[in-house]
Length: 470
Ligand SMILES: Nc1ncnc2c1ncn2[C@@H]1O[C@H](COP(=O)(O)OP(=O)(O)O)[C@@H](O)[C@H]1O
Ligand SMILES: O=C(CO)[C@@H](O)[C@H](O)COP(=O)(O)O
Figure (cartoon, rainbow, N blue to C red):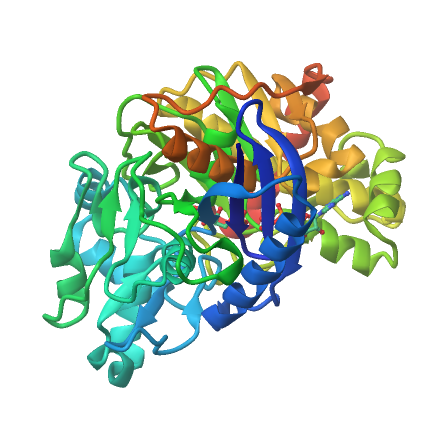
């Protein structure tokens, strides 16, 4: 049997057709999204159709089930006719930072962490709802239903306007969900919306069927899974277990692991999300990952391969340069208004090689701090599994082991979020207790020169503290 997995992520929609027996990807499709932090959901729908068509046109047989994974947290506000009230506000849109701070002042970080697993930052859906109420009351007054990006794509695929669904994983990134009970906390929406309660999607179990596709001709009649958030889907696709920490280098940088119990902590560094199998997914997220390399390559007048070659010809420590890469503001640490900083410049070290290496080291240092934060909430770190677009960079693969201080494994290149969605679809179709056990192949990079890595991280930390006070 063949199944289809869709990843509606920040920069593109990807679709993979997979043989459900062994997890082998038999065909793929991809369609880009524009780079804004607010976007008309219709763009996702068009990209989804294109990516799906590419994938199924090349597939050796018909697909029997489909699931959608998507970028987390984005606010898709709908009116009573199901039309978007405005463009969706994405996870990397920082305008809702003041509303996040107000929520913390009103409730206390510790109380919110205990109730929702999260301390609000601009990324989460609840502060975005509060922003809507404060800044666009005409839209908030007409708000009937709130969906996340993956819920919205699933809802369009289902083609049943009255019913919408989500899963624990994506629900756990809203800020109005309890990871401990698995239920919505609608009173938090009511509070920020001045007493109105929008309709929230039904939360399905990890392998529950969400009906059949009736909204996309090419897939009509195919079994639909509940879908999930992109990081949850990657964890499912990779089948991670104890000791595994995934570091994903896409638009966002994330570090996460599975846990049998909920985590919460009042600094908000580690978000206490749920996973896509009924467990939990402590996760640290930065706003600045792959695009730091895109911007640096652009500034140096080269491409990503050129940037990698330059970085690999500089010595560890980039000749004393440290790049604090907060090009989009930052979420961890919570500095939404920050810009990036390059420190340690001297006449002798301002070379393209050092600048290239500083961009790779700076991006990875933020994630290495994230792995450290996971350790502090009790996660065992035996190896780091590197995925996401920037894991294709030879420089990233070579430099990562010394900064993480553990073995780094790079799974064979694949779209792991879309693969996770496909695994969920296969699970739903099989009706089995557990998801299918698909084996992955890894390329292993031994822990690198840990001493030089520790020095690079220390220089980065000093520079960050000097400039940003954290
Ligand atoms: N060889 C490479 N070196 C560095 N970055 C890369 C490479 N290949 C792709 N990328 C970057 O990966 C990013 C896309 O990664 P992806 O995981 O698909 O992101 P997202 O899931 O956020 O849409 C882009 O910014 C792209 O430039
Ligand atoms: O906000 C988070 C996680 O909390 C991000 O990881 C988004 O889910 C977007 O993911 P990418 O498109 O960057 O993979």
